[in-house]
Length: 454
Image (cartoon, rainbow, N blue to C red; front, side, top):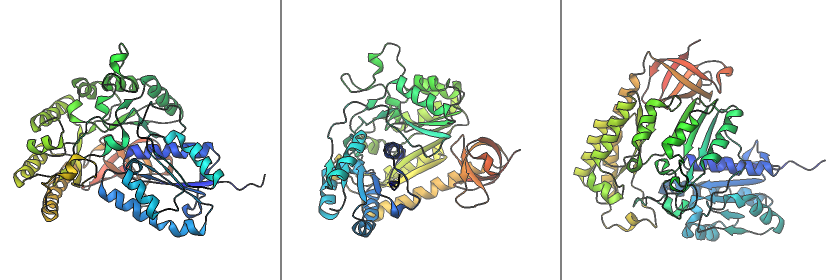
């Protein structure tokens, strides 16, 4: 009766896939009787869910982890857990054993379902434990989740990647592609809709290859199920689920995008008019070195088809500057592509060498000063175009899913338009979780400002 309630705190690094994994970790902890800590420094269990996509993510993680050493030494009963993509790399795990020996539990991406048992083992034995699986195996279903928002949900449709882009560590940390069965995905979304979810974001390293893994692969394959849906078919099925008003997805690889998916933008009522379609470079020579398996003309053709199917579609992208062997002429082709497509926004990155990838050992590394100069020029072009496109919203009314109070103005609320544009607007607390009309009164480069239309 007098037993103290156990608490937890999760620190998440990286992408939406990691955010979704953290929701699963939180769900498993709450099933075990833990509650979220009001003060993170007082938590009984602290979990660091790591990302290895960029070198800066590695450095940030180690910096944050180091800050917890004094807290752990002053509270030996606190359990410190490190998991996620970084833990699938042996040199990272070795570094933690050497420099952060006070970490209690280390696990990887493939055995997240084992977390409750591993945590119990560590606490009952009072000893450190490390368990990393090299192979992912079959998808484990029916794991609990504690979602961040009740009105929108991340839903994994597949795990892993088969593309082996020469700069990317994901196939080595997340394993080969494994698609979930359509029935399991639809069940999860129906249950979320019944609990008030209005928007779902379908997650995968390459959602366009859903169900298309080679014969013998783990998970769902369209070739093994007569009439089984591919990615576009899955979207059409989700479009019919009562209560779901918005469908989004991340991330889409240009080499696998289908004509049927492009048509779905015109035919599905709830598919948001937005696509994140990473191009990475505008140079065919660099794209070939990256092993992206499409060229500039193919990418531009996809954009043209998308805009024909959905004239108002917002297109966002990823771009890498300074990939090994990138010349000034290659970079100029990237700038030209940016001016041609006119992206609504873009995530831009300096090439980040990742140990274990083919590009890591390339002899054609671009000097840092050259990379930074090109990066600055690219940012200038992207922000200029982004501002011009934002100003087109001035005076229009957009539908916004209100997520909560604005971070920059406590008297306003924030949410996203169907195009994924961030909108801050006046309103009252009852708007949170609802899709409401907002008239745009001011358009900045990165966000819009408006007034609620009553």
